[in-house]
Image (cartoon, rainbow, N blue to C red; front, side, top):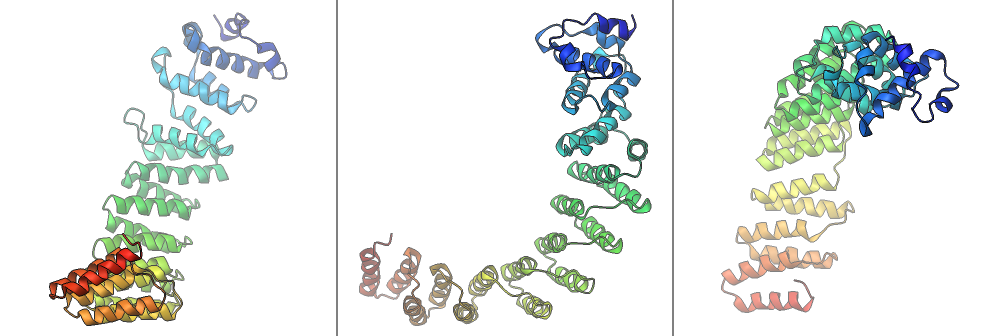
Length: 388
């Protein structure tokens, strides 16, 4: 039985005449097919109708601009989940007809999901050259085509298919397809997360060489990866190199390198980083100073830590007890309790309230010196202030 005659027997679809009265005949047929199939959840699946479907008919339905996109998506999803009920496999063109419409209406999440089917799914996966050809056939040179290619980069990256990422990137470069910097940043993050640091660096340099307007965020992602890998010197050299390319670091880039140096006690490298940041005009913020105080105090350079705290105070930063505690504890570990007490009284003079850790550090070290009464006095003072 031809599809048209079969449709004539579907008069039981509620509201069909009202919903489709302004459609052309072909759209009415498509709408009826969709409505009949996707409303079959509460009744037997219309296998007779499904048997009449062909790839060409599905293409016509999915590409019909008169048929609402949500309905077409539901129709596609139903067929995708029930492919055993039709006599053929949903082909690549079916996917990209719908992907093009989804991207055009900015339904990017749904579009990415369908791209995942054709690029990552073991049963449905197509090689990239075939996908690229289909994108070009469906979208030509339009902005939608550019968006889909960039989405392909992200989909491959999310699936950790980095060989395909590189192939897609090279294809886009060779064919003059604009590459989105934000997509590249996502790829860099994924590469570093997967311990592909060298590939991330190669990818980053390729971005620069292509003339992509690389953001400081992308630079910082790579710097972070290098620093976490212990390659602080290499990170600094990369930052220095990128300055000449017009990519200036920011305080977050600086803090990542400073934190890496202080954790590993790489103070010679820290001086080089500090000089570089001064040269490019990146100032230190509260976080930078905290890393410095923590680093100097942890390795026994307590005088340096104290100088940093003093500099912070002079620059007008609002300090807390924690930073003073690091210095106090450092002097106590060196056996210089007198100097620790001097810092304690100075912080009180500056309006910084000691906390339970401050009193605990001092009481512990003073008692070890045999001055139990003095230690008790500190405990009493703490309790009298309601500090617990």
